[in-house]
Image (tube, rainbow, N blue to C red; front, top):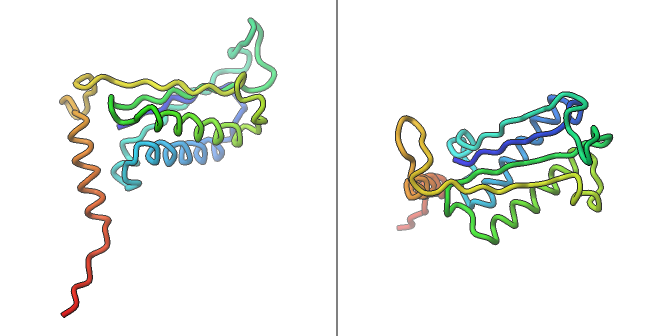
Length: 154
């Protein structure tokens, strides 16, 4: 049930570029979580886009001339190990730099990825608490459903 909040200045992306970006970020997060890339897991991976009006994104107290991007990634506690968080940060940075034509050497000052974990028992959906073990069980069931049937020879 990961969520991402992407914030950037107006005019950085066209609607088509924004959709492509959300698709790539979704794929990267599912991959980092080792979750099945299925319709169900995609449907619960949300990207909220916050395009801020021109002149309202500032650095050093002045409106930015070149876009700066902030991606906040929120996952259930335990969904990403330290290694997988680093994998997601790297993949997301690369995806965002490519999408906004930001040179890699400028990524430190123009692309930030913030990782948040929601403690177990603090994430609710469908009117109830969603526990990480339930998500792991759902992922296991999705993987088993995707697995090719064994051929039995007689």
